[in-house]
Image (cartoon, rainbow, N blue to C red; front, side, top):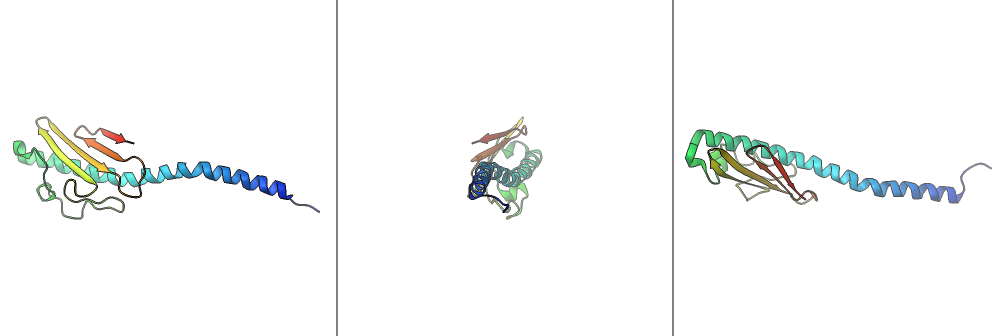
Length: 132
């Protein structure tokens, strides 16, 4: 009679369970990174809108412009995982600190369903800051 013994089957199942336990956190991180790519794309759109706003309005542009002032229609910043809205009302906030030289900050906070990172920030120089 040929086949596996019960002990051999149990060892095989144990090895598969250990590998699955190690792989789940790795896949979870990849899923969160993919979701954050949507948030970063929206932040890039915001950065372009803020640069355009400052170029058109000059010194009066310092502060927190509304979506209408930036030329963004309501709902355009909504994605599958992130929601837009006025600065601070959704998952995003932005502020123009200075217009000479241009200095702004866009922040996205993780919505429910995304565990890491908790916040990502984009400044006028295109530098990303990740808060764990």
